[in-house]
Image 1 (tube, one colour):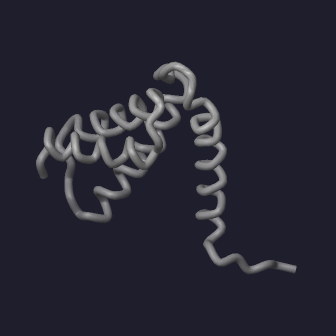
Image 2 (image 1 turned 90 degrees about the vertical axis):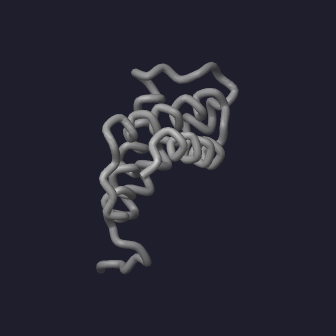
Length: 101
């Protein structure tokens, strides 16, 4: 019997993958900064995907370097112990000042 879910199956898979990827981040907030090749790279990859999605939905074309700057900032802040929400907010502000579009 096929069960109906309130969200599309792709969204459930995405949410599961995101939570699996973010769990070690939350668990390791007291640890030193993440290496770019480790968890920092995973955070940056998720951020880049979200960034591209948001830009596409807004119809804006970001300047060269904007995505790497924004997502590098988020990965660095999370690696330094910031919450995801704080890192996102702080980096959004910093990126908007550096790349006004």
